[in-house]
Image (cartoon, rainbow, N blue to C red):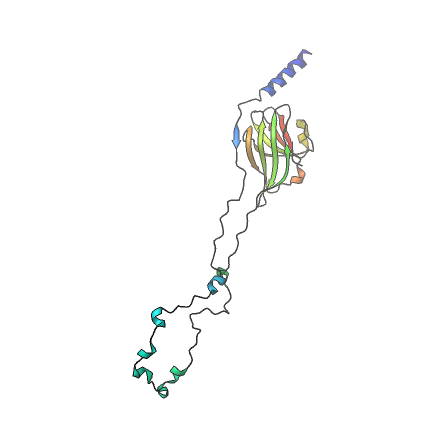
Amino acid sequence: MKVRSFAMLILLGGLAACGTAPTTVNEPFPTTSSAPMATMQPTVDSMMQPTEPMSMTDDMMQTDPMSMTDDMMQTDPMSMTDDMMQPSDPMTDDMIDPTIMPTAESRVEPSAVPAEPVMLSSGAFRGIDHESRGMAMLYKQPDGSMMLRLNDFYVEPGPDMYVFVAMASDIHQPSDLQAGYLELSKLKGSEGNQNYPLPDDFDPALYNNVVIWCEEYQVLMAVAPIQ
């Protein structure tokens, strides 16, 4: 009886020793909303607008026909050359040919609106013999990669803690990890907002829980479901 009580005291002492100074991490939520605006290019419609005809000034409109000299009034029509007799063409080479098709440079292409990360699942943390709170959130990012975010997270501080994703549908004791788990990273902090990238071949259908694990004492600290 004394031996069993002594062993229990050692175990409880080890769990109590898990407590260490808290560390806070606050990583921003990854977003791509700060995309540059599209630059406007001139359109064909704006290039095809007719220019305003030159207006005649008052001096040009007030020419007195009586002021024309006799030489000017007595022009012999027979002396006019063929070039002078040809009607003038109002369309000049400088005007835009309406048959010209718009080019790619003349069109305005709207810039694509960047996508934001999409949340696939989330769950609240519960402590296992230790205090914990906050949310575990699984996101798929615009580039197809996945990320685990601990949001408003807190766990009782301890040494050598890690973040796992576990396959077991329910986690209550260390032996439940035998169903399979994936180690993501050492825990960045005992509280705050934290991002953890997931492997390229990560299959969210295979993992049911996020686990905070104390490696030094081989104990579960907190669990959050993600299914």
